[in-house]
Length: 247
Image 1 (tube, rainbow, N blue to C red):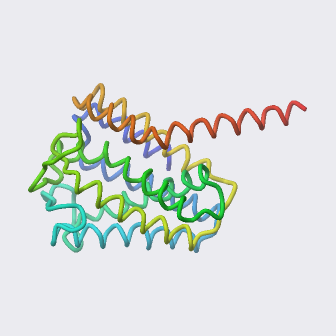
Image 2 (tube, rainbow, N blue to C red; image 1 turned 180 degrees about the vertical axis):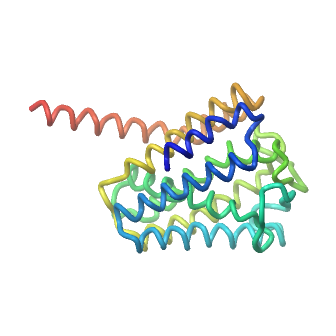
């Protein structure tokens, strides 16, 4: 499922940023991979919690957002992302599922156990930084539109700062709840791999294919603040495992 989702994303640049079919396929496959990973490493209860908290929480935040402008700012979906529920395309809550589980795994790996506030902050940063790449792509494709797109972060034209503030608040709440309800496990290979793939592939896509090099730079720096330490952690763990095996 992870491979199928990645393959769908690889096709995005060759369709001017993705079609509805590719978007749904990538989100569906990667969300399914995330839920399967949660079930196989923590049990089916964990998978249900991820679905309800990340998917349900994301749906609630988006539904309130499109109706009131809080907490992201005033925006609307344009109707070309498929069927909707509560004024939100059904694919959107599964996108929250797709990246909330990796954000939690990344935060736990970097922070360590029993530091819940730090885990929530790092996890919120990890999830919010992904939207630096996501939102410009989706706006350029006409999937949603901002009523007041300014002020925007430097290099991320057309996406208001309020959006990222809202993302951080919602992400902080979701990661906090997930961290309290789901136990730790030494197995985090799939969510870590998904987070690193998303980071490097998003930089490449915006720099080369989507015509947004400034987004590649800004996203590379902000998401890289999480992804690069994560990569170092993975490489050190592999090197340490290799030394133990050799001895």
